[in-house]
Length: 66
Image (cartoon, one colour):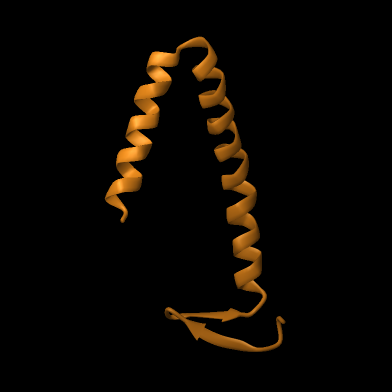
């Protein structure tokens, strides 16, 4: 996968670079997303009114993306 090089957006890349970059992206973002979901789940038990605000914000974002 490192033997074949090609130009991607002005930089010489190999096929190896794309799965490697995706792995880095997922390794950084999935723990952060898990922590945010965990915190929101805890907030629903301790402060349901604030959790409802967060839910309405996410619902508005989902409606805007349609």
